[in-house]
Image 1 (spheres, rainbow, N blue to C red):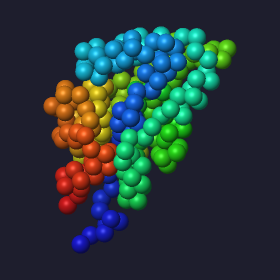
Image 2: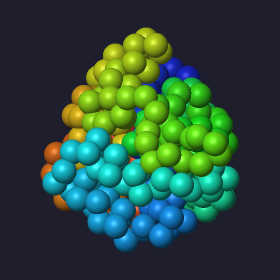
Image 3: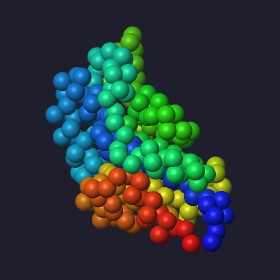
Image 4: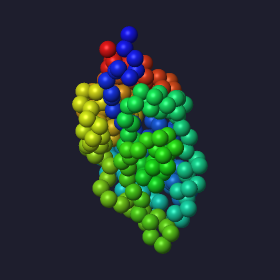
Length: 220
């Protein structure tokens, strides 16, 4: 029987909010601004695919204008890993598979999380800060569904892994392009529109439950 080391390498790219962590960081930030209900309603419409992600992102971030930048550290402590996330990352690292976090959230929060999990590849949005306060605007290009797919392609190319041996895991409409591009697209605790288009849907299980599907479908 081949050992783990004999098996081909795969690249795994994961969404962050409601995938690697249990909540949506934009809603956690909005709670500090008093706009959580408004932001949650916009988030839901975006995840269902009813409005474009970039439009929803700008509308939600606008409600954060004036928050002190220190709120980012507070939200970082509020973020909770999804059950099974740490076990999944440990196993992927054991196998020597490159892992990336590709998020419609914010670098200021995703990068420390990635460092904690031993992940070096991160693509996420940036929050503009001026005079120690959030301006209500994002920095740089928006990480939308096409940007997520491009990030998957980028990591696979950098690691010399064909797209057929890539795995993408996500839960919202913003993940659909990378799920379609990957050799295996997994909808994790996802919205119905995502479950319908993914290769496999995993519901009401810990995140490391994806390993069974990965091993069954991708490894000889």
